[in-house]
Length: 435
Image 1 (cartoon, rainbow, N blue to C red):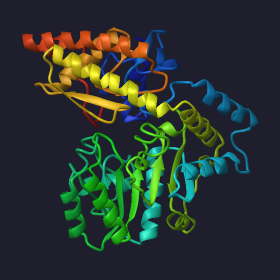
Image 2: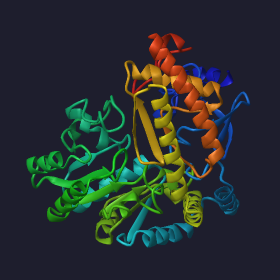
Image 3: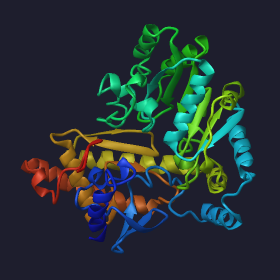
């Protein structure tokens, strides 16, 4: 397999093998995963050997909400590239996109840009700290790789466990940042209020994902909002993963959860680098007093892709499609698992649904599922990120294959030796060194 041969070369010259942990082959199917692609279109990917797969996994780690190489977005991007993607002057599209984002989010009055989610969250936290004049950040959920976030693990190397990825190592993060970020659990109103009480008067920023695995409880939302308002704490909502999937704009609009700042990435531009930090005018204006500036935040491609993507999301009511398709997959998993005596736990919003095996050695079973599905022509793991390119025939074919995979796994469990059926090592469950 040419992809695995190339990946062996990559591990010798690229620390960690890839630029993104979530694309590391060991997270899927060690020694067998087709690590590199030649081309991608819709929800199909061709590897370096020319083999075609239907992507029923992460769709560019959630970036390609319309599907790969969407014609409308690509057309706008190609035109922008031909006109020049960078110059000494600013592109007018950055103003158009800012006005569009504020129109969709009436509570917001100003916009800044970045090109990746992690750096956009760092910008948001910088602005929030500048506005509040306080260093301490209370946070919930996953927010990237930057120092402000990983510093939580300086105090306790398991602080970030339970916030999506376990074992994140803060090596290289200055020890002086210890104690500047403290985690709380989503929907744990009592735990959140306890953190607030213990750090009364010290908190400048609250950061959380609007939604990931579970619906927010009304009392939790109310407690966060009331605390932020009463104590003049800047509230930052991370919409990088959930944004644009449940509705047009941020998921917080659905829950009347207005923040001071909201951060977007991934689906906002359908695979082209783009991120936006939007916020209330009195909060965002402080960005003029803190140095926040980068050359490639001014390229033309990002805003153009963002505008084209948002217009298509709106015109085709894409969130409704994502919810419907995701629910079909969720229901299909449950029905197949029940038929074949498998215990699984399903979580996540419908467009970003995932399941866990509730049997002995769940990572063995996850690896086995990926292995069987790959043999059937699907890039699949225990998660499914819906896209507009996923149509009913893709879902029908996938669920038929998944049913056969579940039957196979059910028999393997009954026979007591699932690991013997693996053709390579067990997949990784989190961050770890490769070499």
